[in-house]
Length: 212
Ligand code: FES
Ligand code: FES
Image 1 (cartoon, protein in one colour):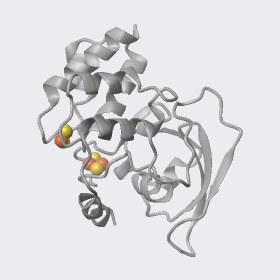
Image 2 (spheres, helix red, strand yellow):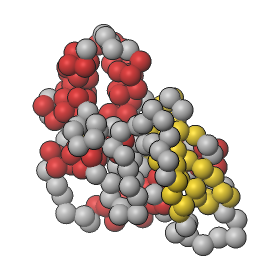
Image 3 (cartoon, helix red, strand yellow):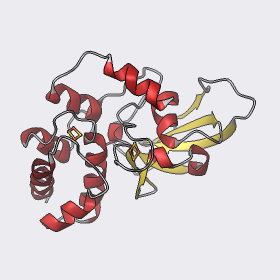
Image 4 (cartoon, helix red, strand yellow):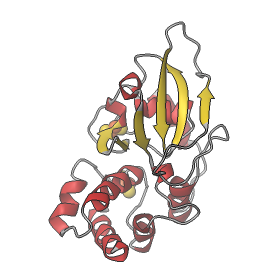
């Protein structure tokens, strides 16, 4: 399924890097989902029920808090969190690239821990708090890390970028004064085929400085 989706995405007209990062940072592709733009300290009052797109007699009901909004959703036990975020909730900012735990493109934060969402079953995330790239921006304003990615030209094709941003945001959330080695370690599980690492490191350090 994910390979088919990747092929479909390849047919979508290209956008500029600035448009891309603004899209993955602020927007959500599906009109079925209303995101808050930032993780909220308290759960939102609203709960959204979601009908699975694929019919099955084996849907298991789960509850997910994604970017501060609660979703009640039925999932098949074999569906990964990445698939549920992208296909069921329309949050396509999270990318599926290798789909086998090697590249980190699908990185999200679950209960304050970085995970590969392509290697995590959605049923195991019942009652979890998930933060995706759609929840990183501060209302209508990009997060300093997203802005630093733009300012430092820290992306080329952009496929690794949402995962990189999530990994580095997790670092900055916990370590406001990271050294270069901390930054390198934080995104060691995120591969960039375009080789943007030096600019990614610069962006993370610059964002850390601006956030202090
Ligand atoms: S898509 Fe999940 S690790 Fe590569
Ligand atoms: S910018 Fe292309 S894979 Fe990282």
